[in-house]
Image 1 (spheres, helix red, strand yellow):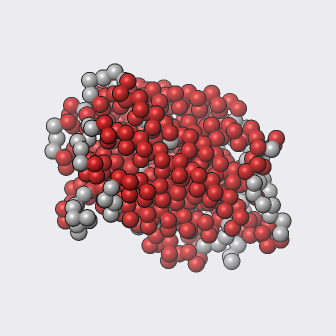
Image 2 (cartoon, rainbow, N blue to C red):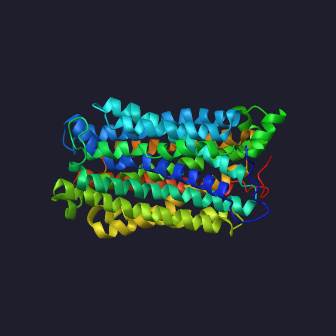
Image 3 (cartoon, rainbow, N blue to C red):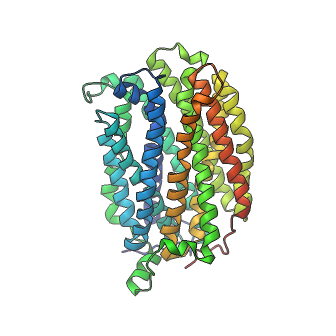
Length: 446
């Protein structure tokens, strides 16, 4: 297999461009798959449960659909990180993308909430495994430190492009869905949106033969010097602090997203300017507000990628995004989210900017603190145990708090619950950052 040697020049070769495009497509559709749930969960549950959107069973199932697939993804994603270290980055990367693409298409044919939950779990498993494999793969293919930081940072920015893609897809199917073929006898916009996840499988099948394996992993595997990965290794003295702190902080990043930001599509229909709109116009408005958050997240990821090669201290780089986000999130959810559509759009843009950028931070940071044989396992533990299994439970906490919050309507109660959970996540993450170890070198540890 062709080796990638980028150190001699900053110019990317055609093969390296192919690698970057593949990773960017993977990251984009990771977000496409994950971020479709906030958009489709309300209409999907209304259709499948045959109850109005304000019925308590809808709120209960929202928490389940956010949390259970994330836990399933965390468990299997953890195993996927181990398999990435055992069988190679490329192989696991390809199969994980195929898994979530096919599962998304199947989810569009769900006839019950239980079926939707099952396929959503499969989608989440694929996404969780793909992220770990892709970050390890990119980091080891591009060994020049500054080039690696830029490539990992900018390709991850396509994660927010995926959010824009699903927002745009939802807007289109809401507007033109009646012209598409029937699915389960209806033109339900949520079904078409779920099925759009099949798209990345098509180019992946075509370019798979041209993708190289990680040179460092392949050489160590061939020489018989690659140690077997072990979860116990993560808690040895030299790795324990890194493992614990990154797990807590990734949990907080996911908690801010799942416990607050991803609740916005259910908050918007309760605003006075939106409440009386026809269904198509209401769903279009939800999509437009969501697009502001995605644009903010995309810009935040790009800015982080730019700053990642200019700010040496990883802790200082993270604080650039944590501190403003910690101030803005409660203000946006306590005020515009309850009474002003225009201010909510711009407020969620800003919150998305500071919050979503932090997801790219971890893709740049984690490969630099674990050696080759433990890289996939270490990244997987932080992302899946911290982010997916612990952090996403914030969605369940938010929906559980709704009934005890002040406010005249369920959407206002949800906004207050989101403010509480999101702010707590930010505060804990910021306090934990002071224990975050700085990487010892620019080169990846062997």
